[in-house]
Length: 73
Image 1 (cartoon, helix red, strand yellow):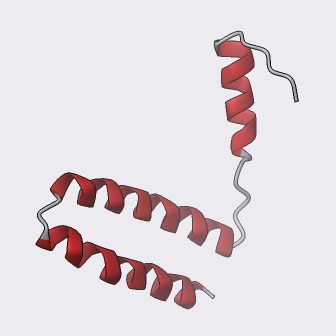
Image 2: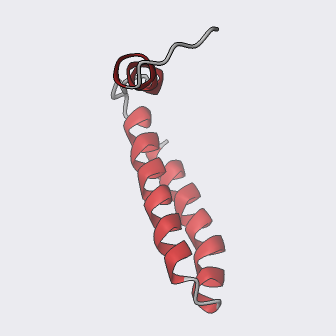
């Protein structure tokens, strides 16, 4: 499964990166590489069975405790 994950991310990079380099979109390449790396790490951690925290808890904490906003569900 990890091998398939690596192949998928390499495939995505091989499709997207040459066009960004050819057009000299250096900033977009940096942002794309950052997001691709982050998503690869998260997908790899989920694949090997590491429990990841729910991002909704952090968003909820930010909205309620830091910004002192309330929202209805």
